[in-house]
Length: 115
Image (cartoon, rainbow, N blue to C red; front, side, top):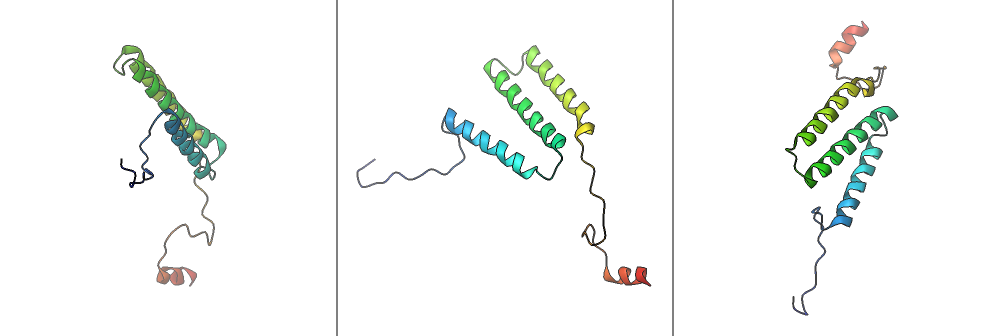
């Protein structure tokens, strides 16, 4: 690089090292927690647990091989646990209240129903 050229900032999301990858992961986790605030804590905990479990398995399997019998068995058990816990973490849909904007109704049907 010559003395007249300035180094430009790289704003890509490509991790450059261990610290930047950990920072991006933490930002993603914080973003998930903030956007999931409308869900009950158990649903948010379930989602975060699934993400952490999948990330942990991926990191562990990359140290050896994802095709090892232990890695595949762990993946299967994690998937089974996530499937069994999914109904527990399911959120009930909000009840439709008048004026909540829950659906699109044609005006002529509204007037017909009012008559």
